[in-house]
Length: 257
Image (cartoon, rainbow, N blue to C red):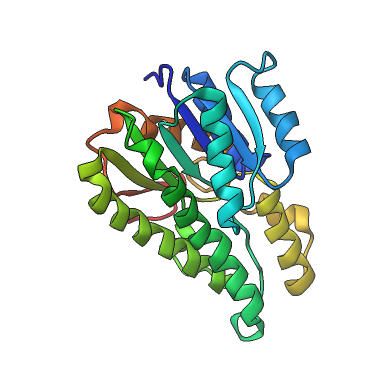
């Protein structure tokens, strides 16, 4: 599999899954704009992935802002002169019992996790139609298929991402754009550690023990971000042309459908 001379934009790329995706794209021969709210951290990640700076660009992007998203796309095309795909990875989680969730917290999750995906897809569309191997990969979650407790807003937002993926896959296929989603399980990231901290604070226990207990039974460990990244890189490639509108589980067999 090779991404050749193609260019991709990844949101939420300062760390975690987004950084793993950006690294996998470069590993496969592509160039990548790493977009995130934290420009300093994004720049550090970009340099770690490609110390030469030839294949990476760090840009600030707030996916809750139409203007910021448009500026990130413009900056990517200005630097690399093309855009072949986007990976919508930026997201937030608001841990709480549903009965205690505020409308503001609910709205924030949906705006960033769902509308942020739509904003980026819409902003990139004009450039993607000029590519002969355009692709979009949206990072959903197995939470979008299984309603885990204490994260109703996150679950709902990721279910919406899965449906948005299927909708755009159908609508944009005639434009030559392949759209898929991935549904990771327990990935070794700061977000997962934050979930463990919340559970420890609200339900008792040691956060390290809780985090260790999140290891996936079939592999005996959590998933590494680069492992998610390599699956995403495959879905961006021409090798994945016949995989369309899918929500692919990347959770070591945790979710059976």
